[in-house]
Image 1: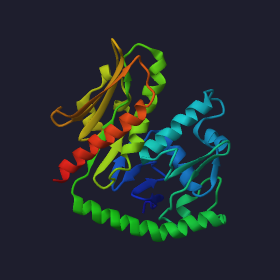
Image 2: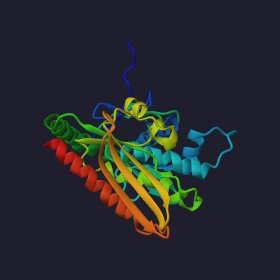
Image 3: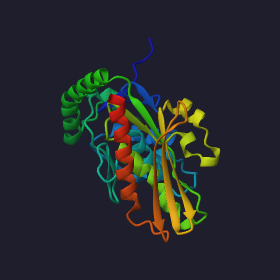
Image 4: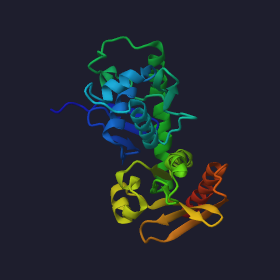
Length: 291
């Protein structure tokens, strides 16, 4: 008989600690190998601080020479993307400056055998905080899972929205930082809108390709998404313009388009405006689907 999988359940998610597969309400969530290993380590130490050094040793071999700070920032951002989490207002992964990271959501799998690792024996006493997390997680998490399952069953099939990286086509490198962070900001904003009606995906490889190499058919196949959000920053005579489009992947039709113009190229306040308008546009799509 094959051994039972070691599963960690939290909220609407289920994570297999052996295969490193993440699922949300039974639907597989794409996550790259390194972020998946980081999530496994955080779950195995739920409620406790995992130091940056421990994460580095887990994710990279001693003979690998990389920019660890940049690499670790990317890995944690991908973990949060997969979970629809936010560093500023975390529900799952909390950052403790200069100390490390901590998984803070209740777990609904209290069995210690599911979290045994080479450095943590199954009979090692859990910290009081970890025991509390597991105990209340078993009670609250089960109720939440039942409620989510009922809501999902009543609401019908869930839509999936893919968010592509924002493209900087101005030819000006000073805008790279803005476009590089916008997709993550949008994902964090949209992922909490209506988890029973819509899932958000942003870390699939096909979504990280430049616009010139992006294939909508491939994205639909890889992500299972019904819609995709595509945004591009372009130069204009008076400054720059961000064109954001929500496209239905079945037929390629545009269901929402918004242009944000900035005279002189000043991007002050643009992120907040984009987030608000994108949320408004996606909400209108969800409302129309309900009808």
